[in-house]
Length: 209
Image 1: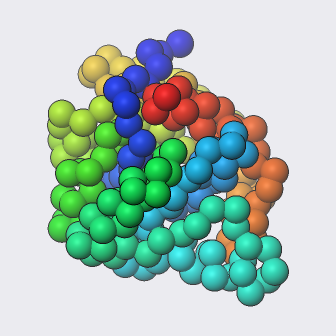
Image 2: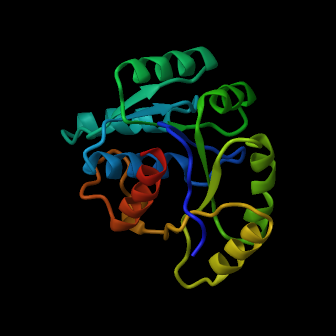
Image 3: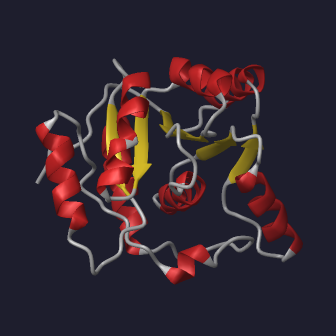
């Protein structure tokens, strides 16, 4: 078992990767809902200009299934800093930030406010190779890679974990499998949250407690 993610007195967590299509938005939301189920006050900041989570929240409202967590749209550095300040003043237990790919100013702004970075990635050698530029961006910040959207039939996760850990990278104990129900969840209030996201929430809660 790898070392637990450990940071000192933090409540600002970002899901961050300079590459798109790694599942940041879905992972952010499901983890937020799992933390809410734990009784924490959670604020989600959607820093992606595409506003996937904000659109998800609006669609859930229209369907009469409002999310159990508030989504704030923060597509610029100024909005992000203001929202983080407001969440701290409101004494939110945890702030989760969904960051965009390919938007350097927003990524740079996020890096200045976060206490813990989670880097989602698939497990193929190509995907792992694309993790390194993001890890370089996060130098000096407590960071863990989260192996995400894994095919249960593949053994690549074990190889990926070993590759990363041998390079001194922390890998979250929890690995997230690919689930059709999760891929279809857009616009709904997906509760109860699958157990695997509760496990990741436990790791984060341990880190921020």
